[in-house]
Image 1 (cartoon, helix red, strand yellow):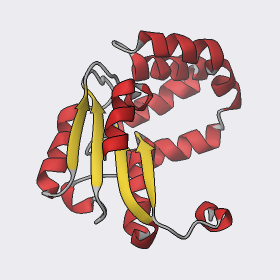
Image 2 (image 1 turned 90 degrees about the vertical axis):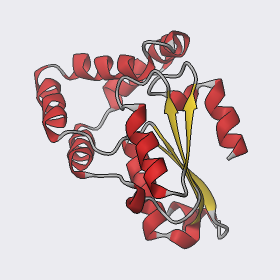
Image 3 (image 1 turned 45 degrees about the vertical axis):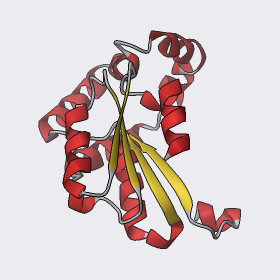
Length: 176
């Protein structure tokens, strides 16, 4: 709908991070004529359902602590400067504005979604991963790229789960 409203008819590059990476892959599979290439950042094969349920339980107990902990994991151990900027400028708003129903729905989707080489879209795909990601193991994304036989994988030196905020990501995405 967004592409239609924007008047864009040319295929686009779609970038998705973490859960958004799974959604970007799904979109590119469902609408192959709309997507020129897909860049999937910080994805993995699957999130263990028990882990996702644990997050849901922590959200119910202490929503702010759960989300703050997740945000910290997205940046640590290596992107502390970016984390400080996020915490100082956006975190309070994110904690206040986060739609709980949308968050629970996203987590439920995350518990059910799977990614493998044969589930990647047919367009060119680049899987990008921070080498220091503690949320999603880089080896899973690298394995998905390898088994597809056509996707590329790039590990961003020094980046964590929020690899899309690193200078290394900008260079890789521009070259893709």
